[in-house]
Length: 414
Image 1: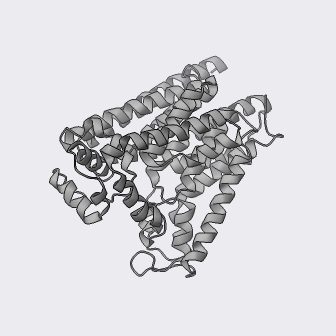
Image 2: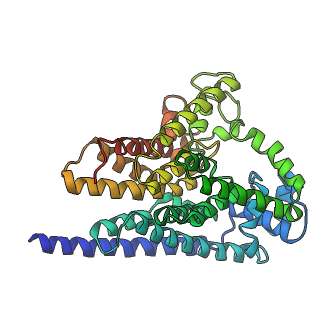
Image 3: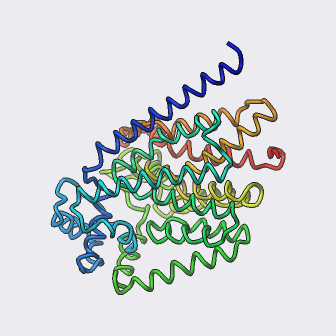
């Protein structure tokens, strides 16, 4: 078989892989569409409460929140009110529907947002589905496990992915409005984006920084009559003050540096019965802050050493591993970094024809995030087995390490 025939065969195979993966994703989405799960139930309850004109502040009491949720017909789940008041704005357009119908419509919106995100990211990094490389990479995104978690539980991180993708396209086109506005949206909907504001400062994008911050302040001010000033006060006192510090926040479901450290060095009879060492909470907190700050600073140090979209994507990824809480579905926003680094590695290989340790680490890390793993079964495992309970975190950190390696001046290729 000559090279042309082999290439054509590979193209047909990759097209089949894309079609099959898309079909599986659609079947999965249809199965989960009418199922009202935790995550979506929380968003729906926030929005439905606002739609009916009831105050949000009382919802930050867990018992009140779940009673309110049951009054809307959601009786099969229990959830936690740990989002900012402006989260209610996201599902407000579907909150007038029944919970089941609202979840179905929301799922369709997530799929559309994902498709739009991939289109924007591929254009931003100069990739095409007309190439075998583009087809293979797109097939990978269609089996990305965090995407499935978002679909199943109606989570909002695909919407955030779309926002970040628009920002990256804005960076590519040098359009300040397209860059700043989505970042303000992610801040308002989920509190995601403070590190991006630091990235704006590090890259001297003062217009984008001021615009994003101003939009957040204006929207918060405008929506106070709707959401209530007291809701923000209760949110900061009841949620933000303890975020990432409670024993349950060290559950292996939370794949963050903070979660790992508290799991290893905190004792709690219910949630953390087998720490390696029981340290004072303040000591663990200081260690966590120090390591997270080191990750952020190391990422910021590369902010002007590669393309703006790529370093922006790295900061988005760093926002996940350094967050107080981040479950598997958060890792859907690693896709911009994965796509950007994939393009970079492919371009480098086409020049050097070398496949080394960085490439190997990158592929292994991507696969660990992409596939389903039963890591939550290790929640109550004793050390050292419990160390295996954080595979997504390790893979995320490894991808940031790959970014760090590939953006060294000696590693950059034209």
